[in-house]
Image (cartoon, rainbow, N blue to C red; front, top):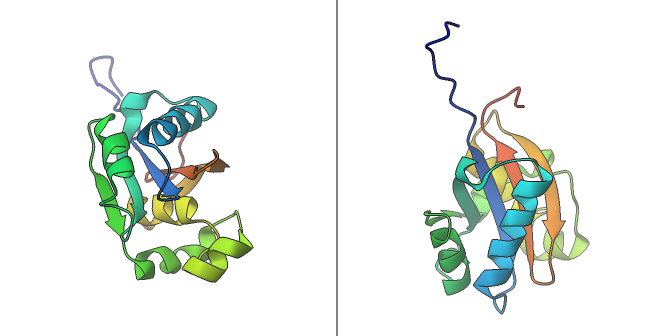
Length: 139
């Protein structure tokens, strides 16, 4: 690589799971916390993904808008297709959603087949967040 070549840092996908009563500020704070724990700047966030039945909720729409994004809706088949790569298992979520973690499944499904988790699920009172890298080999 020459000195005049610009290296674009990999973009990151956040997966979010949340209860309907969760305020947008809580989701925004959790996203900032996740990015901070992974050592990533907010500008690296390329997408915010969640289950299709939650993607139109005001809380996730407002949280995504705070990052200049709109939520990516993933249907149940998208989420269950990556469940084997989900590392966190919640019995309650497995029983209701068929995946161990909505946040991890959403991040992985949205980031693509070669994606890997950069940050497994972390939680606040009403939400969960995981980060996935669509580019293998990061960081």
